[in-house]
Image (cartoon, rainbow, N blue to C red; front, top):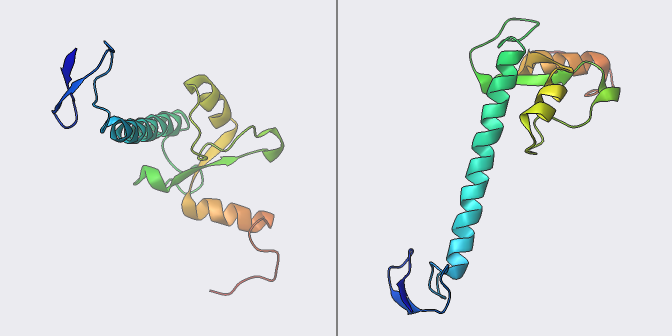
Length: 130
């Protein structure tokens, strides 16, 4: 049977009913499919973060910052019960994500760094002078 490739629009011969790409473009289609999947995962992660930020009040619980969602981070209240990092890039169900988010407090980047500084996670030396 003769088909037309969806990428290069050239005619090609195939016995497969489901084949939609010519043999030259088959590798290209895989690359495009991978890019599409990566893009879809990014959208999914962003949507989950938006929902989690809304769930936790939408602003830094310390200073009230709420201007940019990308500057808001999740800080685990008790690291010993942490199952995974919310920002690690994994995609999981909303139920799992929400469960982990509820173990956290929502803080802006600056307050998050101050929390870790005070806990001694970032600097294990004398006070820094600004």
